[in-house]
Image: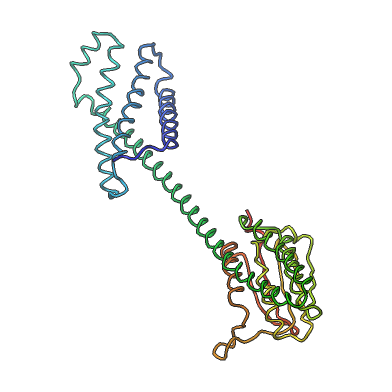
Length: 362
């Protein structure tokens, strides 16, 4: 069964077919006939020759459309193209004779019929075969070019969808983790201070609203992410009171820099959760963001130290599990080859730094 022709391909074919033969005919005429004094009949005969070629190549296209060339060898396809070109070159020559000669009068037409033979037209057949072989080559090259571009477009679209699906999966993996921690914080205050608990519910509602608004947008301005983080700290500060001190240092140039939503949040969660276990009180957390040389740098610094996960793997810090792994994977998907994520200990503080190059945008 022959698949239906794509309207786009059909349109391109006719544009190239009409313009190509018209251009070839005009150039051929200017080179070989423009200096001759041609009467109307001869000029019309010349035009008929290329009208016949136009029809012949349409018939060849019908054959090529039925040729499963993608599953044939190059030699096999080349042989078919050569044979088809020669066959239709013969058809072109004789069809051209029968269509053209009546224009010159019945007597000349009769004399031409008497002279028509394969031998007398071998030169013209050879030349027409070359033209039709060239046309066939261009036909297949253009088809291959179109198919290659379509394949590239399909591949890019598939990769984009795969990345989008993976990013969504990572988001939904993160949200329950964040919600679990937030609800635990609220639960701890319900019986102790209902006013604070209500305030924390309000802050949580603002965080959830941010999540709902931004869930369909891969990127958000850093300023929106910082606002969401401030809602989170409002919850935690009500829980820890004087044991938690938070500060921000955000470069105005960095505020509109787009980043994946909830990218920084897991780093903040780790700073609170594990800082409370290793830091002297109060736990001090500082979030910094700046832009230099078209590169955004975000750092989350908390007092304390890395907490070893177990005796078998003391080189790997605890608190870098799901949250930090999520950040790494999202950065790799969104900014492949154009980001850095580093962790270090400086002056009795744990520092996690993200660097993103601006040139990946667009």
